Each structure stands twice: as structure tokens, then as C-alpha cells.
Length: 409
Ligand SMILES: Nc1nc2c(ncn2[C@@H]2O[C@H](COP(=O)(O)OP(=O)(O)O)[C@@H](O)[C@H]2O)c(=O)[nH]1
Ligand SMILES: [Mg+2]
Image 1: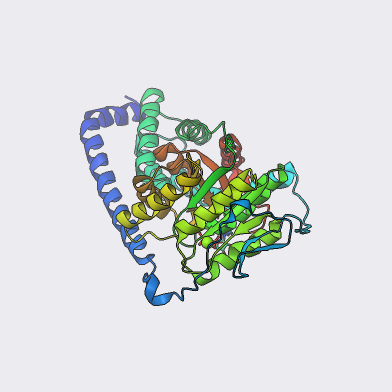
Image 2 (image 1 turned 45 degrees about the vertical axis):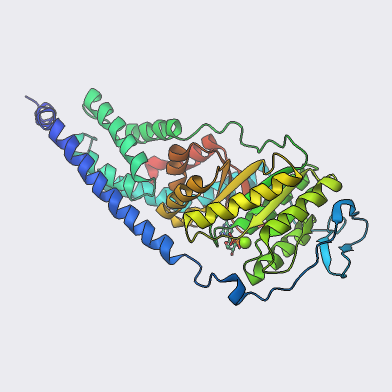
């Protein structure tokens, strides 16, 4: 009996036992990870959530602004407080638009760390082994789990790999890479319709996600993409919670050259949304993008807040928001999966944008997110600049991830 047949025999004899054990180990690994993530998200909660206590509420009288015209640079309400900043006629940035090739390079360099870390770990595990057989599967499983793909998704891949190795007895390392490439493609949701379909006017996109994930930055980049397509874009600064949040969105609106509706810090986010949608309707905007505060201190509060905002919006535009976009930060790895869990429980999420894929080794999280949530990842953030938002293309991403993978060691 050859050595592989011997291993196979032993493997088959212990197969049931091993599978059981493997599942138990994975469950315990999963528990540890979940616990870790839970602790992490606890520590990310804003410490001073006390609106009345910390916020100087400057009362901004709402105007009946249904007929506001944006002819002037600033439209002022009855108290001479600017309500809408009109930037659409301003000469915005003069940076050069990147070519398709530039974008590809940016994607390649963005996911380089993810790629290097994943394939070098994989190469280390299979180093010195001519073939991949059952004995190496545990090590490959470790690599998948530690690459932020997510435990559930890793388990699915490993089960398929087990079947394959049982069938073929063994595969070599380039076959392993091809196998992983095919399986990962199958697991990732097919996002053929990558663009957000702007099928109503105004089309309202509400952007949600915890603090610091890149919501405001994404809104700026997105506004630029829509403007470039000839859309009339209005931003709504409904993150009234933090001092700098409104200012940050104003800066983006000026940079991109799109209009913005704002009130003072501390005002009711729902009221900002109401104003924004009214202005959008009255002035024929094509797209409205609403920035929200990233509070995730508990599911009930989050749910209540988002429900309130949605209800107020639908009073002005009945089916708004048309798209709830969840922004997740790839560099937080497993924690991004946990946030997706929380947000999808609190509200219906229509699309996901995964930011900070540049400079992180945890980009594998996009595979787990696509597999587990069945929500299209529409955009990826690959930097802080205005052009650093790309429509997510599964095949391009996978090609970039696996290109020359055999050479990494
Ligand atoms: N490298 C990188 N940084 C990003 C990306 N998106 C956002 N950021 C940065 O992340 C930080 C937080 O972003 P911000 O938009 O304020 O997050 P928010 O709190 O969710 O609105 C800022 O310093 C951004 O410049 C990205 O795709 N890549
Ligand atoms: Mg923000």
C-alpha cells in the first residue's frame, strides 16, 4: 500500500471523528473571535453620548424652503443663517481623472498587503510539501481563518477542499491556488449590477456605519462619481452629533462642487433629512446622499434612530430612502463582519461600501462579507482622495488577488 493510500485509509477511518472534532474546534474558534469582536465594538462606543450634556444647541430656525432657488451662492433663511450651500457653480478641484489603467494599478497596490500576507502564509504552510493532502488541510484552514475571511466562509471553503482532496487524493500548490480562486469566486455574490440604480428622482441614499469607517469621505467620493455622470447631487449633513462632522461634509461639498443642506451641530438629524429632501424635491435634484452619525451603542437605539429618520424621509418622498448604504472599514477585519451583523439586524441594508482596502492585510474580509450577507458590495475605498472609490468588480478583485500568487513565498 502506497503512503497516500495509507493516509487515505487512516483518514477515512477517522473521517467522522475528525469532521466532528474540526467542527468543534471551529465553533470554539468562532466563539473566541465573536467574543473578541464584541469586546472591540464595546470599546468603540462613543464615550460621551449625551446630546444635551455635550452639545451646544444653536437653534436654527427651519424655513419653509420648498421653493428655495439656488441662484445665489448661499441661500439664507429668515435668520440669515445659511441653510443650503450651493457649490455647483464653483470651480471645484482640478485633479486629473484617473484612467482605467490607473484604477487597476491602484486596486493592485491597494490589496497588495492582503495578497502578500495570505499567500505567504499559505506558502509557508505548504512549504516543503510536494502535494496538498489531508494532512495539510488543518494548516490551510488556519491560514483562511487568520486571513479575516470569516470562520463560516473559511469552513465552507475547507469542506469543499476536503471533498476535492478526497476525490483526487492530492493536489499541487498551483492547483490549490486555482481551486481557491474558483471557490472564492463562487462564494462571492455576483455583483453584476454594481452600479446603484438611480431609478427615482430624487434618488435618496442614506449612508450608515459606525464612527470612523469612512462614511463622510465615501459620500464625497460618491458625489464626485455621480456629478461626473451629469447628475445633480445634494448632500444632507445629518451627522449633527460631532462638532467637526458637518464641517467635514461642507469641505467635501466644496471640493466636489455639489450643494449641501445643513443645520447646526446638535440639531435633530431627522429634521436635517426633512429639509434636505424638501429642497431636493423642490429643486429637482437627481441624487441625495445623507450622512448619518455613527452611533452603535445598542441595537434598539440604532434601530429607533434609523427608523425615525426613514419615517421622516418618507413623509417628503414616499419611498425614500431608496438605498441604505452600509460603510465598513476593511482594516478592522472580523469587526467589520460583526458590524454588518448588527446593522443588518437593525435596518434593511441595500448595499455595502468597504473602505480602506489600501494598506490593510485584512482585505480578505470582503470575501466573508460577500458570502455571508448576500448584499452587494457596490464600492470599495482604496485611498483618501476624491478618485479613490471604485465600483467593486468581483472578477477584477479576484484576478488581482490571485495574479502571480504562485510566486509569493
Ligand atoms: N486609506 C484610506 N483612508 C480612508 C478611506 N476612506 C476613509 N478614509 C479615512 O478614514 C478616516 C475617517 O473617515 P470619515 O469619512 O471621517 O469617517 P466617518 O466617521 O465614518 O464619517 C479619515 O481620515 C478618512 O480620510 C479609504 O478608502 N482609504
Ligand atoms: Mg463622518
